[in-house]
Length: 127
Image (cartoon, rainbow, N blue to C red; front, side, top):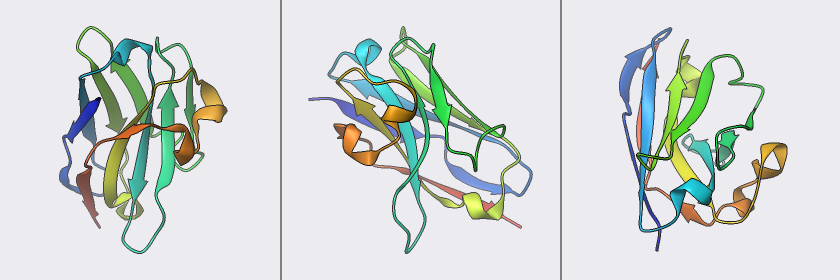
């Protein structure tokens, strides 16, 4: 059973930065496509970014392209999301997810692709 644990959330002012981490255990992290999603109160869970098993292919939703960067360190079984130029509308619970089947790029942007989810970490951006 794969376990994913997010960390790094918190309160930040608009224009600031945060780096989220997602530590994986219990599976074969280096073979999984990984993704970041978020869910704001009263809204559906939204795809943000995905990265393939070796980090060579990434894909972002337009709303975060150029501001957020997804990366991974397979030696550390850890996924990251660097978030810059944060806006109040980025306020949400952020989740990482793992897809144990091969997936890359836009094809990994759907919630149903992912098999395992973390518990989420809260990000709050004040204006």
